[in-house]
Structures are given as structure tokens and as C-alpha cells.
Length: 187
Image (cartoon, rainbow, N blue to C red; front, top):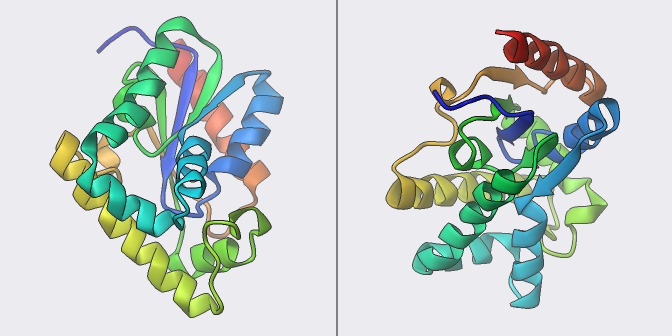
């Protein structure tokens, strides 16, 4: 095991609360943040693609995917005291405290469908269509990550902590994470 760093990597199911919870953690810990998702959404928008089409595109352009993941590792070499909000943050920075956020797919679809920040790259007419798209994206990512890195992001053995956010508030999830993170740093 590499030396521990004061870094929390947040991975998880789509719409599990990574972005919201990372904001709370940043405020409570006075940490910085590194977000792969914002970069990915920016690239998708620049290319005129919705997020699922961009995920399909990444499947045929592994060099872009690898650069996206490598950027978190590079950032961690120069920084400490930050949150990584990235699906493979735990893989890119193994010396981080690795957290996986789970959520029921119906709750995830509801959250995503009602999230105004997603509308420019995830614009669906019905909740059911959004749910189908989340499942499709999950599978596309899993195929791509297995092909490129030989990992499954939802394999809980990769993580120090798993939190189900389906029925708790983002503040409650953040408190659980901070509590367990402090224990992890001491051990």
C-alpha cells in the first residue's frame, strides 16, 4: 500500500450525489476539488454530443479516455487536501481514501431527470427515457473501463467505504464519509 494522502476519491453510480457531496466535503474539510466529470461534459458539449454519445465515442478513442483518467493522477502528484470527483479516481490515485456512492436506479433517474445542470447534455422527455439512458451509460462505462484498465468501478472491494445515498441526505452522506476518513487517516 502506498502512503496515504489527504485525498478523498469519490466514485459511484450515476446520479448518486458525487457532485453535491463533494461540495459539502470541500466546505467541511476546507479542501480543493478535482472533477473529471466537468471536463468530460465540456468535451461532449464542444463536440456537439450528448453525454451518452460521447461515452460511445470514447469507446473508439481510448487515448482520450486514458488522458482524462491520467489527469487525476497527475494532479495528485502536485496537490494534497482535495476531493477527486471521478469514476476512476480510486484507480488513478490509489493512495486516496476511496469512497463509492450507491443509489437505487429509480432514485438516480429521478435525480438526474430533475437536475437542471444536466439538461445541456442529458435532455430527456420522460423519466423512463432518462433511466434507460443511465443504464446504457453505466454499461458503456463498464465495458470501456474493463477494456482499457481491467477494472469494474462498482466492485466494492476497490473501496475503503461504500455509502448508499438512496435514502439519506447529502449532508448525512458527507458526515459518514468524514467520520470514516478521519479513522482511516489515523490507522
